[in-house]
Image (cartoon, rainbow, N blue to C red; front, top):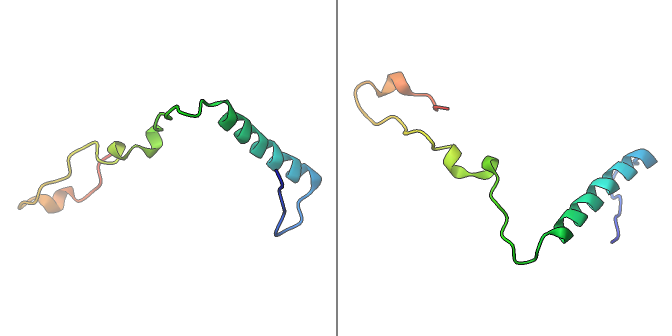
Length: 69
């Protein structure tokens, strides 16, 4: 694995921190079974956005023009 700094001048401490993160992510990816499906994070779940019904058109819709949640 080769890492190249293309912009800036990181200190040795900053470079060591960045490399520690990259190595930890690579180790975690290598530890997962190759055919396993990952569980979807709640943050990425589109159902959390539309968990509530949106206001239906009608004469009082203007009073409910906010995004619930």
